[in-house]
Length: 249
Ligand SMILES: O=C(O)CCC(=O)C(=O)O
Image (cartoon, rainbow, N blue to C red; front, side):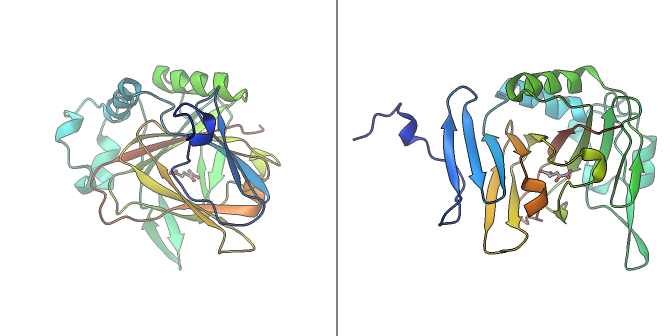
């Protein structure tokens, strides 16, 4: 029988497709899994941030001058009202995108913080960064220390409930460089994050991103794989995702 503490007993909480080129190995130092997939790699640490840190982040991200964040029904806050809420730490906004010639609200709230000049365009939306805040810098330095990469900006996504989502895409904008390292910190409700190989859609991986999970996408992953956060009818609470990136300015 394998020893309880032996690395061999560690099992990733997601299933990799059968066949060659997929492997998850336990990284004792970082308390997570290094995962290799055909044409890419990622790192997954379920509890990278402990509960106290993660709980604090959930509050930090919602604190505002108007009302106790716990009593607000965020799903029913209009875009106009949101604009007038003075958030203490994060500049949340409701963006619109053009879809079939119509302007429609993105199914989530977003914010962009980073170094001056680290402007970013995604889905046709150009975002100039808001300044770093103490909490964001704290999270960034913990990640940078662990993974040995530097990040000059962060895109924040707020999924108010399971109706909010993000469609299939790759983080392959040219300002991110050739093989970007993208660090995704997760707080609040658990949501599924899926990866799908561009050439073979049967190569699909569903990864639970929990309260305190860190996911690092790296190598050629953005070139050969796309990712998505699908809607989930059974998710009630808010989930916050912070993706730290490095933009070549
Ligand atoms: O919410 C997530 O986990 C994914 C975020 C993402 O893919 C993005 O912001 O580009």
